[in-house]
Length: 554
Image (cartoon, rainbow, N blue to C red; front, side, top):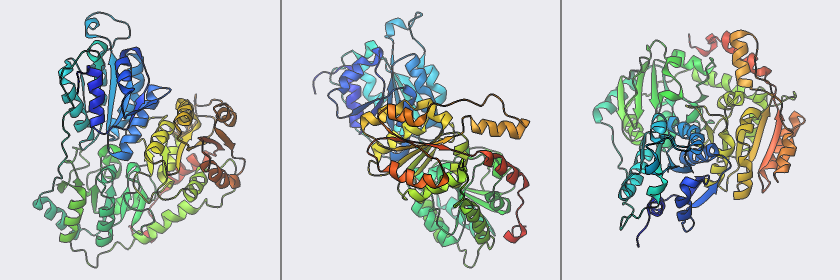
């Protein structure tokens, strides 16, 4: 290898890490990196906004477990990048953000577009630094990937001044990657967990995103089946156990009570598997801290007064679950209330299967979407009122088939995320589910989707307003304020970009429209009017919810 400049070495290091795609925008201060990418095996995806680039890297990281990479220039390019970086960090997605920067000779004075980006990114990353010595580049890149991908994964940031990018690095070369070794829980903690689970009368598993990240879904399903323990999953734990499994109680995490709350009310032990507190605060399901907890995860439990485990089983999740199951005797023990509770939950889900109302109720839209999508197909949910309904009603057979921005809850993720999902899984159907508010935040990336050849469907829940905020306002104050807006003609909008556009005109239209849209070889947009009166009806029902004696929960 001949002499390289810092930017060229950086790109060689990215290649060494197995990077496939780099999402970003060109700028003056990252010109040397872009030039180095011209002869690289890495495919640079030019996006229309830095936020879109960061969201693409975010979702790439979620789906692959490998760090997604995004690039921006300095100043406004870097500030635009931050939302997606913060989203990845809070939701445990490995991501490496690279920013251009002014030369080191300009940092001591007031300088055009200069911001201290290391200070700015510090609160939204696991680690970040600036390259100030060219010969440190290989160490910095290796550390960035190691930190980003280590459990719990998250975002890191590297800032590279333009004069440093142009400097020679001599004979420096990428560092060898080290493999992460599996860690095992102590026998003491496994025995303590097994004893507590054997003793419990009504245990309940709470499966979180860590179960998905650790590829432990199969082990969890076997654990639950063998010990006959029901499983609820968080928004980000969908698919941790197939939703069709007789012990699956589906998704918990709504801010309002739901039928699944009854199972938590009655549980005498919650077995939290791969659960991050940010997914659903324990103060929501264990407000007094009176329910006993077992923590099973790759990392120790966070500190929370409502989450003080009897035992912490820290190590490889699959091995921990198998070891606990071997040592736990629950022969003949069953929670007789669970079949009836599950029947009620499923009955509620299927209630709108044949509803013909128009605009279409959110439950019906999601029910029909589930019928069209195969088990391995992927939906990316944006943030808004539809997210609450997707979390409650879109159920998964497989891990990583329903992605939801949860910890940061960032609007605008769905369309960029769908591009990344289609790049990772070109053989699967991908649907971006979004409200009209979220759609207008990053709809420009549909041009990116067309250009890079990633056909997917964008399904818009159209209510001409910020429906989730209206829902909150009415619940709290009795009236909405400042949430209404008008929309462009979404069909014409799609067609103007060279896409296919559809408008749903009746409930009966939705399934055939979805099927036709999924069959296209270009991105498609479906404008679907939604009846969000269901939001307030659900609030009323949750306020009146009591756990029926027929559940045998009281």
